[in-house]
Image (cartoon, rainbow, N blue to C red):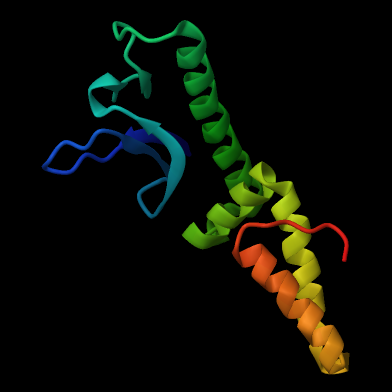
Length: 145
């Protein structure tokens, strides 16, 4: 089982490209994940899977970026080892998001629980639920209401 980091550059060179990850286990199984890490294509070393050593860049930025790539590769490996080949692209993204954004997970679980209970709610409670869903959709996070 291997996890590799790579970038995809279109015919016209873009200013930056997101780092993508490929999880492979034999010939039969492979998944892809697009991360939020972005890099200028000319500065990406495809073989080393990090920023090129000869690029002029602040050393702390280089170390932070390279460590982030390595941590994400380790995270993908650990998720795969716990889930196995039943892992899908969507479930991989969901599991990564749970680790990276635990507050979203808690809020999503709260909204899911409320949706499960919707038959038992009166109209006032339904309006409160809809307000929470709109907060989640718009990126606002409410812990108590």
